[in-house]
Image (cartoon, rainbow, N blue to C red; front, side, top):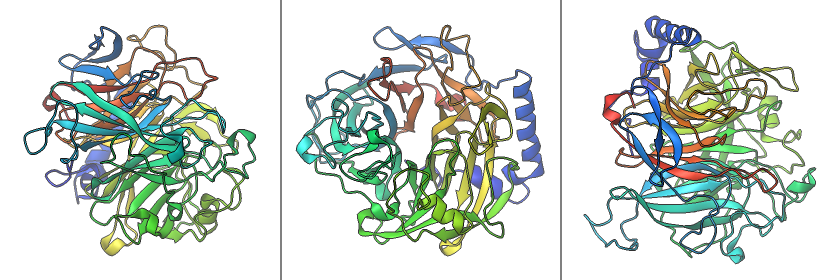
Length: 513
């Protein structure tokens, strides 16, 4: 869904002379909003939240009055292709259902099936190499027979509010964390948050093939149409999180999450052919013009526009034994003056603006300390705007959390139909215990947090069922339904935690989202 052509985005406000996030007035409003949060004030533009049951009668979420939801594709349930719904339900994209596909109870053509939505969803399976039982599918079509992550595709009836079909759509990859919507919305890009492979220093990550890549899942792939995935090696081998594609140019922007204590870069991949990313291209890492090796993890001012330059990664597909290997893409870019972030995660494009999240950046500290001495924050949201003719562009800090109450450890995010942001929490701070009055008995409660165009954060939903992170938030092409996942557990050695996909509807027009 294109939302940027009929309204001003966050960054347009930041760049507008005398107005928006870059102006003194807007910065004062942002400062005031954070100050109110520190004194217990929390804006509630949709009203207070309350525990709400899904269609099964189970209280999974707390939502504002007037909102309702259904849950489906629960972990362990049997999908329509006969395989079990996998573990670790993470990043996800929403697409219009291809017109030429027929599904049970639905016909062809205009007016028939237009209310079907396709969701392509990652499985961040973190089981050791060769451990079966995660995401299965036809193993003869797996990229790597020793890996059990990948993607599933779900067909959802937005009118009837029910799941129509779900099936494996990519297998043989691993730790498929986040991803993004490809050029012309033809593919879901799924990223591997690992650099495992035959030469890995970690025995559990010694997969038969190299990992740490982006892969393309065709949106129109149907059940039992699996083909082995092709790694987009020129887009980089690193600990991938999310990706976002400028729908005007086809340039792919990528975030990196190597974990705490290892520098993370923000990358752009300029493909030879935007419709086929496997054809090759150029990988670069973001730098701040005139400020080599700048550390953007803290000490930044909201609304300030930083001029960007890009440094080329000479070896985008290096041999790696570990994520911090001297030959890593980050270390290559850092050696040329690239910028450092802390744990870059969610990434989303809107009208050529790329929003991305640093999960534990910021000046307000959560109590955890990295191996390099950096004291982690509660999270930042950045926005990159390309320059003319693909020149450097500008980078702007559009939001920074001042406390765990306001926002703790943002992960996936999306731009909403009305121009706000929604961020999924994945509480990463071990030193701060978060409880919530609507979720008694759960420590480190995770929420969906809305961020208005004024930079004010507010609670939109709370996971009251379990301590699982929330992930994969996106809106249907119509804008009526917001989808996201309860992650569940990532490996079999963890205690069982139920994961599922949620579809929320309600009076969006009453508020800023």
